[in-house]
Amino acid sequence: MHLPVSLRTRILPALAVAALAVPLTLAASAPPAAAQKKKTEAILLEGELERAVVERVLAGGPQKFIASLRLAPHMNGKRFVGFRIDGFAADSPLVNGGAVQPGDVVLRVNREPVERPDQFMRAWEVVGGADRLEVELLRGTQRYLYRWTLI
Image: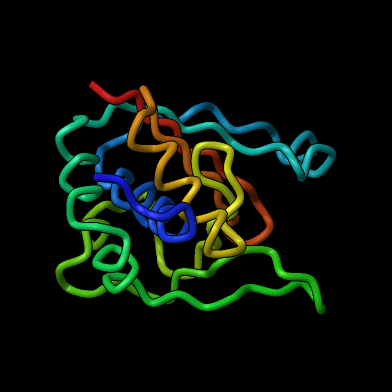
């Protein structure tokens, strides 16, 4: 399935969120003092995800994926940071995932920013041919990088 770059960029964050439904092995967190020094460093959480799960989400198309999420722009003053997940539709692939939560702000998917529709579509395309799915998000003031190897 080949989608316009603008559509894929919006869908990729949602796809990444869907992957979060897979149980993850959490990396050890840094002590509080170290965490304060390295606020911008993301905590890495890794796991595995069946490629078929990602393919099903991609096959449904970006519009269906985006429609399954309630998103809102997240700002830091006047600067756009990312899209905040305000909730999931009952049929969202992310609804039972547990990794992505309401309030999380999606920053990047597979290292691609998702601020604009064209960026989202680029991310959507990248996920389709990738060996892993990465979703960088902000939860409160802490960054997280979820990384799933596609099996």
